[in-house]
Length: 388
Image (cartoon, rainbow, N blue to C red; front, top):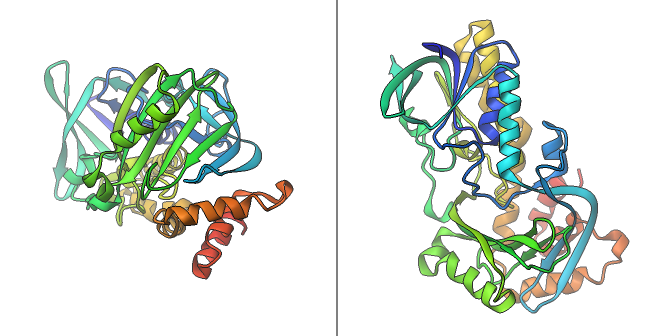
């Protein structure tokens, strides 16, 4: 290893690997540090992603595709189901393999990767981040860098150490829990979503298929709801009612930011990407594709800053992200706030009304239009993201 790198990336998830790859592709020296033993493990994710979101960065490979998704199923509290067919538009991933391949792509571009490297501080001189402190094999070490990119997840400490405002209000943090279970008899090409107070008040419940008779089953509810009743209790009730004898292969729990991007995601010597920057889609809670986009932008701009010897160039990252996806996420948040607190009767009415629409005219945009028919301002937002 070198004593100094142009760019150090903290975290080897999708956002981190994209940042490392896009920086290394410009010929600068890059080191990616991962605190866990293995890239891609443990998996804390529903693993569903849009096809276009992935294929912008990596060619499809059946080794990391657990399911090809072509339908969306909305299930209302009274048991009604409204189905949207949209062609081969999504995947459910095997994140262990997927994340590994993204890190390999970063390495192929020239980035160095070090696992079990626990970053526990930053080097700061004259108000500028200039490297990291980390523990490796029981020893405390330091490395200098021209730019540090924090892609260390929702619990990110890198941004906080750098003085960026990373606080998130309790109500905006989704409390999520999920199991991967077998003997689940569902359509392997459909993403199932359940809404209502018995499933996931203020959020949604999901079943995402992962191959033959295996699925990720979980939910996310707001922190305010989670204070009164745990997300795990909702999951347990659902499993007892619907899949009482299903073997559970894995169980995970964690928080997902359900809000817009941080006000500032760059400062002298530091950039944040992925969950660390709150680059998650506020409506769906999905962060894989948006994290990859954020990471790629951060890596590209960091590499440019080093090559041009213009350190302040990294401060253009905020605007570049906002133009690419940040503005769209603000629209998604408004739609989310208009939908997730509907009473059960409203969800039932949406399903009933949508099922009257001919199959050939059923789209996700039409579904959201049906849901928000009495909220004209939000219909404009739906048009922005699903039509225009």
